[in-house]
Length: 205
Ligand SMILES: NC(=O)c1ccc[n+]([C@@H]2O[C@H](COP(=O)([O-])OP(=O)(O)OC[C@H]3O[C@@H](n4cnc5c(N)ncnc54)[C@H](OP(=O)(O)O)[C@@H]3O)[C@@H](O)[C@H]2O)c1
Image 1 (cartoon, helix red, strand yellow):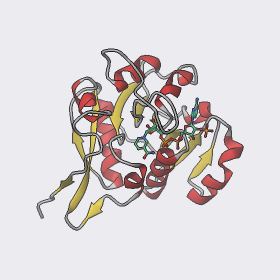
Image 2 (cartoon, helix red, strand yellow):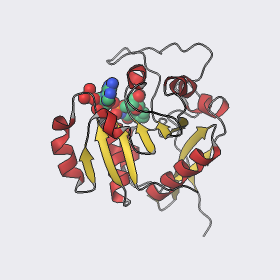
Image 3 (tube, protein in one colour):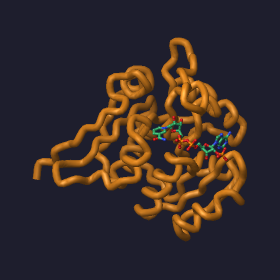
C-alpha cells in the first residue's frame, strides 16, 4: 500500500483545520492553501506547529494526496491548479449550492457529488470521506471506551481507497468501505441515508 508523508489540504476552514490537525498529530507534514493566500494562514500554521506550512492553493494541491475541504460550488475553480492525474483526492465536500443559511442543493443531474468532483479534477483518484460528520467530530479523538467512530469512505480506485483507509485508521477512525463513488457516494452524500449518522465499531478485544 502507498503511504503518504506530506498531505495537501485545500481549504483551511472548519474541515481543513480539522484534517490538518489530525494529520500533524499523526506524524505527517501538511501544506494548507485557501483562496486568499498563505499570508492569511500564518496564525493557523503557527498553531499547528512546525509540520504545517501555508502555501498557495496550487502548492496545497501538489502532494500526491490532497484533502478537498472547499465549498462544493468552488470545485470547478480548482480544475487547473495542478495536474490532478493520478493524485488521491479525498473529497470531504457536501453538495450545497451556496454559502449562507439557505443553501439548497447544487444540481449535478444524475451524478453523485463525488463523481461530479472527479469530472472536474481530470485523472484524480477521488475518494469520498469525512463529509458525513461535523468538523468537530473530525477534530476529536475518534477512539471511545465503547468503540471507534466509523468513518465511511467510497471510491473507484482500489489503491487510493486503501491509502485513504490507512490515513483514516491512523487518525483513529474505524474506516468502513462503502464501495464506489456511485453507490457508496450516494449513501454518504447530503440526503443519503448515512449522512450525519454516527456509528461506533465495537472492537472485540
Ligand atoms: N463544516 C463542517 O462541519 C463540514 C462537515 C463535513 C463536510 N463539510 C464540507 O466540507 C467543505 C468545507 O467546509 P468548511 O465548513 O470547512 O468550509 P469553510 O469553513 O467555509 O472553509 C472553506 C475553505 O475553502 C477555501 N476556498 C474556497 N474557495 C477556494 C478556492 N477556489 N481555492 C482554494 N480554497 C478555496 C476557503 O478559503 P478562503 O477563506 O480564503 O476563501 C476556506 O478556507 C464543504 O464542502 C462542506 O460542505 C463541512
